[in-house]
Image (tube, rainbow, N blue to C red):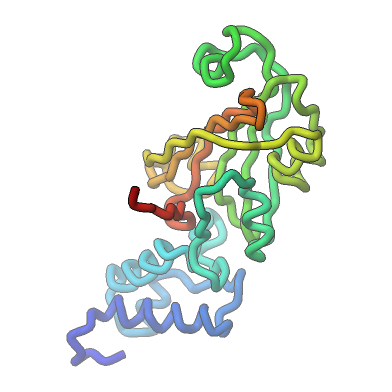
Length: 240
C-alpha cells in the first residue's frame, strides 16, 4: 500500500483483495482472518479494514456468516438477472452459479384475501402455498414465496429442490405467457435475516409477480426477497 497516495487506504486494500479474488488466488470458500488480525498485519486501523471488507461484501465478493466469519463467495460479482419471465433457479444454473433450494413450506391452504385478489379467486378458496430459500454457491440469496391454483401443480419437496418452479409448471403443460411485476426495497425482518444470514434491518430487494398463461389465466403469484448486496435486476428500456 502507498500511504503517500491520495487514494484512501481502505480503497487500496479492497482493490488488492478484489484482484486476488478475481484472479482465483483467493478461492470461493476461503475464510479471511478477522478484521482485528488483518488490521494488525497491515498496520491499519480497524475502521479502515472494516470499510475495505464491507466494500467487497457490497459487491457480492465476500459474505459474512454468523459463527464462521468472512468468506469469499465467488469471483463473478453479484448475480445479475434480466427482468424476464424466467425462473431464478434456471437463471442461476445457466450462469454457472450452482443453485440449491431449501423447501420451508409446501401445502394447500385457504387463500388470504390479498392472495385471493392476486389470483382472481374467492378469499378462503384452497391454493398451494410454497416457501423456499434459494442458494447460489451455498450462500442464501433469496426467499421465494409462491401461491398457485391447487390443481395446477402438485410438486413434492424433492422436485422443488432440484427444479425451478416455472420449469415444473411448463413441464405440466402450462404455457407461461406474461407477468405483472413490481420491484422495491425494504429492511429484513428477524425471520428473513436468519434465513438469509444477514443482520436484521439489512437492505433487501423485493419482487411481487403475478404470472398468466397463454389463455389469460393466473398461473401463480410470487412474493420474493433478495439479498441486496448480492443481487440486481437488469431492465432494458426502449424509447417509444
